[in-house]
Length: 339
Image (tube, rainbow, N blue to C red):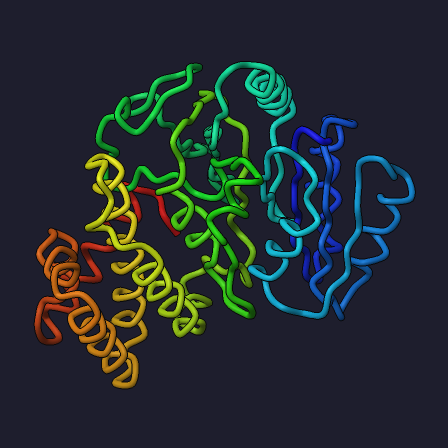
């Protein structure tokens, strides 16, 4: 059995996918690299995937599927995974070689040890094009370093300090046990991927190494603000799936509950601000519909989200209120580094 399965969802990714694959090959036979071609039509993504499979038949597996979107490619990767642990690396991202070696040696140690760790966490780096200073998302001030720990050992995460898909490696069987299935033809499903399994996670391990390199800079990238506004219905869909997937008030561990509330809050803030930023009456109506949905679905959750600092700022009335909301969001972008 493989130690680690890595899924690389690819859609017309020929220009950059080799960098992602090459960065993972040093894991050799401990690693299974599942390159999922999500029905590419504009380039030779599938041919590149198959060429790596032919060259490294014990490491790389090329899988073709009809176009189903990023989430369906992750689903396919998980279905094909034989590794004890599972990681997603997007086709325009890559991993750091030295940190990767540490991650693999740590997973080997954990597999051979007495503790069955559900999640391994490492740092990720915002590789933002044109920026000399690269922001690193670290967790050493809130969770123990290089030791098995539980949610009880964690401190309260700061606003903006989130465990994203980039920073997490899950135990493969845990993802299957919790029934994780991402929706088709929907962007931003990485938020579901890191959020829904969390109540099932009991034991964790954190490596303070800059492992994942998250590239930001392509005009068509899903986190580009103009692209997010264009795809706002998909952002709202993800937001609602997260609301309905986990009853946060039934989570007994208060630290985990607080963390998940904060995560859901920022997703809801992003949905709200993108609707405001678009400036159209149609999207302002969608903003009202989103908050009405929250109120109707769970009044306690509505009040929790609405009465937080960001929730209050995002719902200031009138044009002047919307301007303040946008200004607050821009400040948050600089401080936190999201988008």
